Length: 292
Image (cartoon, rainbow, N blue to C red):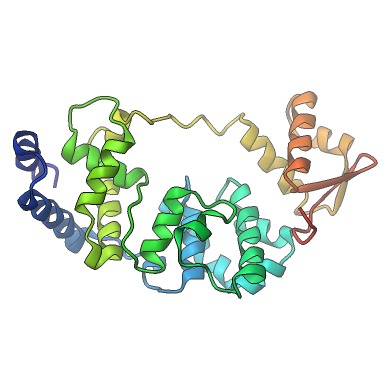
């Protein structure tokens, strides 16, 4: 797979992006996809709700971890209506193991907005999608491609890796705006779902086969360790409330093995973010159904 890119890269450096090179680039990507494309459950559906669930789960989370939770989450919450009306406790319980609990909260808020403002149907345009909680530029573009099969340009980590590998194999600090133009010029608008799936799978293989090309991106940021982080403490605190309906601050401080001032600061954050409610020093998990 990797050796096949050498001649392509030389041709690009010599003549720029010609029509013949676009055809060759697509051929290489599709050829790999036909041989090694991943069979993932969210690729077997056209249901925008199910695709949305997968896209939010996949944010900053490995495919293997999402596979372990995707089907069970959909069984528990099979529709926007069921997710919108569910207690936050049930959603967080089903979400355990995926991390970044803000995404679970965002999913419920998306469901509530979809039910209230879009007649229970995920909107099929970029502006409306980006107005929803937890949906940024990349996720909105992915939803346009995968849920609505509309030609769009978007970039996530695997796609960035592919374009850096093919077009900038030795360049340091490549800006996303340069890659964005190449993505726009090479997108296969006639097979947009398959094209982006194929790009993502090629990028996933690159991560295993070569030194991570994304390190040559101008936007590369190494993820900070989870152990000992505020994210870990947030997770510990929220897990307490999956078993206890209400806890006083002193019990929380006793159960969380960290500096008291740090835990108090994180409790304040979780309260401001509407994960928790606090009254007279007693904390409880928000229902997710209260006004935010």
